[in-house]
Length: 311
Image (tube, rainbow, N blue to C red; front, side):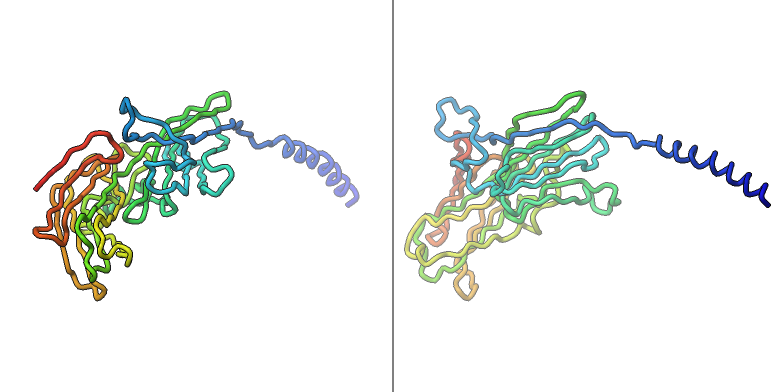
């Protein structure tokens, strides 16, 4: 018995330190990361009245015209070569660091995505084609219909053996549609709706496809605009909305006016309205007058050129 205990003691004295030493030598590898900093300093746009007609750069935080609505949210996403999100940040315009992104990434090649818009701009995913498996989900930017003024940028970034600091400018990905009623607003007018059948729900972050996700509802969604008492008896009531289109499109736009009981009192349908990214389309004319004549003006705010279509 004493001999057995002696052997056991010698065994433990020999094996346990070896095990401890072996365990101590197992160290998880540390992946070196490099500092990544982006300064989202501006957006690219056309400035009306510019002498040379070239693109001009304005501060993202200034919101000077022709920005039509404040940019209140900035999304930043990093994808690896397998389309996996490895980093993601959402900034609000109330944040002190709004427009400045600080990150840390290991060596590799990444796709960096930026999106700026109003508070409804969200990050989501959906199938590129109906009935595809979940593995086919692609990341998208999505907004309520209609969109707010929205800017986007996708860049490739290779991180090798040093820190990265870059300035980034974003590009507008929406068009704008404005309805301008030139006739006098009648006393019984209460609500105006504008329906455009060319807008899309979503904008893909990684794919070359310009837009996808389907048109916003069957025949488009009717966007309501309440008519204030101050507009009664006056002309040039305006209703504007933003939309995402697949490059260029020919849209059908329906303008309806209702009284307080939701009874339709006037309607105009304008077909073959040209819509395009970074383009302001203006429908102006008479809704309540004889014939309800509506004219189409193109690019009157975001691009120096103008095309008028009469019918």
